[in-house]
Structures are given as structure tokens and as C-alpha cells.
Length: 167
Image 1 (cartoon, rainbow, N blue to C red):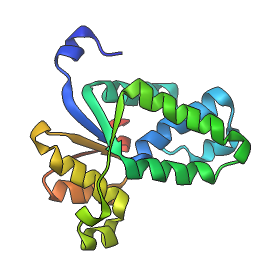
Image 2: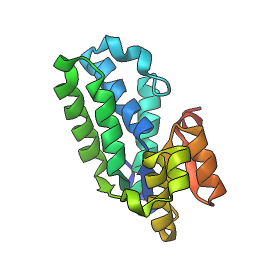
Image 3: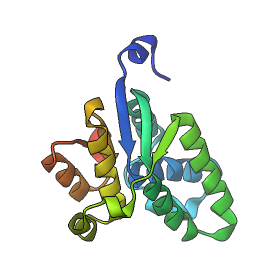
Image 4: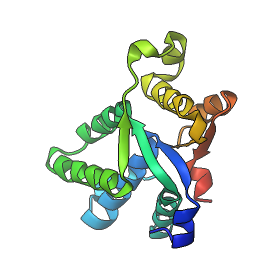
């Protein structure tokens, strides 16, 4: 939880890509629910300290949002896991969303540039579009995806890699 100073000085908006959400959920699944078969999927949040560091960063923001497309990407990942553990993984996703006060925004495919969708895919383009729409709030997009980081920065957006955050 943020201190009273942090609450008074929080940044306005954090936009989350699927990668950071995946890492947070995966860490809980492996550490607290013994989903050991998923441990090799962890790439960045490898300890309680890194989980806490990521959570503290997320807590610095008044609002957190993601794209509805990110939820579809999370669904794709969960569907590839063992059937008997899927309900627990979804419960963890719901818990993370509730704990963050996560909002979801819809970006319609027909609102996206065709060339960008072909190059980056609709999930990444939707996140960039949300960041552009909310540019007056100076949002930060949190991701694990270096091409998304580069594209966002070239568009003048603030993009943070989770792996750089956890150094």
C-alpha cells in the first residue's frame, strides 16, 4: 500500500499490457498455489522482492487500465494450461484486477490503423491507442515487449519495461 505521501503525489494513469499481468498472476500461481509446472514461464518476477517492487510501482498510479484485447490474450494463455487449474488462474486474474482497481477500455478494430495492426497486432495497437487517447494524463504503458516499447517511444509515449523496473 502506498504511504500517505505517495497517495498525495501519485501519478495519474498506468496502462498495463498482458505481460506484466501474466507475470503477477503466474508468480502467485507458482508461489502460493504450487503450480510448479508453470514456474518455467516466469521471466521477470522471480521473487517476493520483485513482486513487491512491481506492486509498489503499480500502486504509484491513481488509475490503472488495460485493453479488453489484453483480457483475450490472458484467456489464450490460461486456455493453454491444465484444465483443472484454469479456474484458479482466472480467480487470480480477478484478484489482481480488483486489487489494482483495474479498468478496461475497448478499442475497436476498425478504429485501428491497418498497417499498425499488421505490424504489431491488435493488442499492442489497442494499448498504444489508449495511451494516445489519454495523452493529457501523461500515462505510462507497462509492458515486457521491447518492440511495443520502441513503437510507443517513437510515438512520443512513455513506455516502461517491467524488466528495467525490476533491476
